[in-house]
Image 1 (spheres, rainbow, N blue to C red):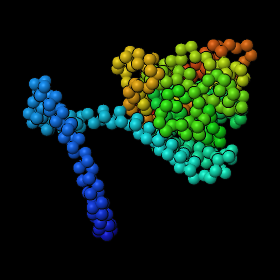
Image 2 (image 1 turned 30 degrees about the vertical axis):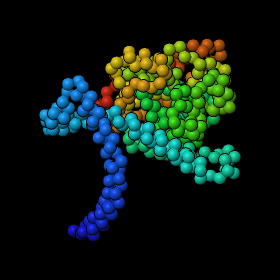
Image 3 (image 1 turned 60 degrees about the vertical axis):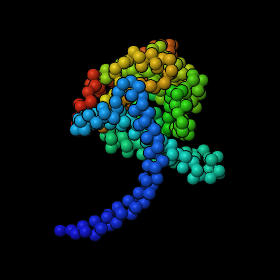
Image 4 (image 1 turned 90 degrees about the vertical axis):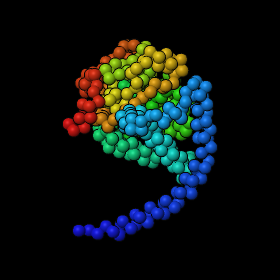
Length: 352
């Protein structure tokens, strides 16, 4: 039998050092915070007293066991709303890496064409690894991705489009091509996102910009439903496109094919809150901001399916081409997605 006493002594010594280092810091932090906590407590007591409520007496009558029981009952609910924040932390971790990468290169490197190639590949490997571990991520139909030349990737927008990050990562690694992503304008106002959007060619997507990228032979990825579809679609996976045909106009002008894309179970990974839908719709239409609460982060199985290209056809109107693209995505949903979606069954897909 192995003797672990040596390792136990090391751990105990490390624990002592850590405790000795942390205690002064924690004591100093508490001394700084304690006056504000006292002021907050006094304010709450006085406010409750003005309403005829004896707050200290009320707290003393509360059963501590009941509070503990409520805490453990509500903990899973809190976790499912906090997990989406983990994705935001990972995104900021990616941004931090890009800043460090930029600082590592000299001014001379800044004028070379492939400055960010290494960064893109490194970030792509990180996100692909995250996808394989957390979602068992797979991508099918890569043979439909063009080796060269322009194309319009048309995909369904999930509540949080993490599946699109995984798809981009797989394409960078396996096809050695990067895509131009059409993103919502609010992204440009998120603190710290500027460098990330620059490195991964995210644009707000005006018609002139998309046409220019396609004429340069780039692949442009767009979700015609946009943020509205991401926030207000549900487990039935209905497309919310309205009358958006701009992507079809660009494809016709540049004679680029449109490629439908869909990720299985993307709505089971992250979901937007279904209650108070009319209020959140009203709020979104007036602010154009993603203020709908999103929950999830469930490790369900994700598979991205890249459909057959819809080639350019002479005489086809933008509306007709947009209808074809919509039908292409709806066909992928019918083939690969249970409707309505079910989180538990999507979890079981990890083992099938």
